Image (cartoon, rainbow, N blue to C red; front, side):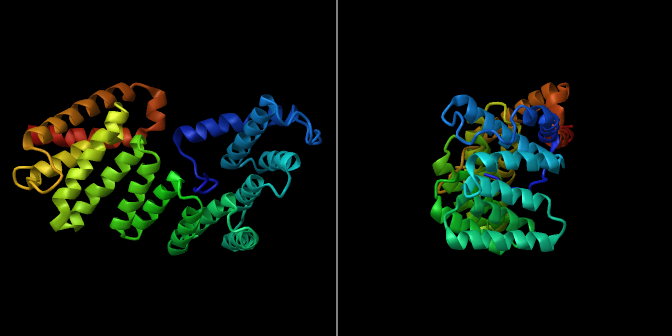
Length: 315
C-alpha cells in the first residue's frame, strides 16, 4: 500500500532503490515493449518478471529516473491494460511524482475523484487519493478518505496505522489509540505496531491525569509484547525504558493503583534494567556494523543519548 509520497526515501531504502534503478537498461532491454500480450500469462516466470518491473518502476521514481519509470509503466500497461486497477494506481503515482506544482497535483486529485465516481471501490486509487490529500496538507480530508477506504477494506492494517498517525497529528489521541488497536486485531504479531501503540499510550499519559496510571501500564505491556515478538527491536527497548522509568517516577505501581493495569515496583525496576542492558548491547553491536548504522542511524543516536542520560543520573 503506497500511502507515502512517491519521492520519499531514506537510508538503506535509497541505496536499494539506486542499485535497482541502475539495472533499468538491462531489465527493460530484455523485455521488449511489443511483447505479446498473451504470452505465458500463467507461468511463474511471467509473474516474477512483471513483479520485478513494478519494483523497478518504484525504484526509478524514487531516484528521479522518470524516463525509465515511464518505460516500466508502459510495459505494465501493455501487458495488463489501462483499465487494470493496479496499473491505474501506478499511473497515478507517476503523475504525482512528476507533477511540477500543487496545481498539477490538484489535477491528479480531480482525476482520482472522477475514477472513484465511476468505481467507488477502486482500492489503488482510493489509496493514492489518501496519500495525495496528505501531501497537500489536507489532513481532515485525508482522514475522511481513509475512513471511506476502511469501510471498503476494513482488514487493511496499514490503513488503520495511517489513520492513527493522522488522528494523533490532529491531537485526537483516543481515536489514534482505537485505530492502532484495530490494526493489532488484524496483525496481532506485528511488533512495530505494538511499539507504536506503546509510544502513543505513553504520550497520552501527559494529557490524561486521571487515566494516566492505566495508560502508562498498557504502554509498558505493549512495549513488552513488542520485544517478546522481536528480541532485538531497539525501538521497543527504548520505549520500555522510558515507560517503566515514568511509572517508577510517578509511583504508578500496583500497590498504589490496584485498579490500574500496572506492575509492582520491583517488576518495573527489572524491566527498566533489562531495557537499558539490551539497548546497550544493541547499540554496541550495530555501531560497528556499517549496514546497520546506515539504515538506523537516527535510532542508534537517540538510544545512545538515552543511555548517556541514565548513566549520568547514576553517577
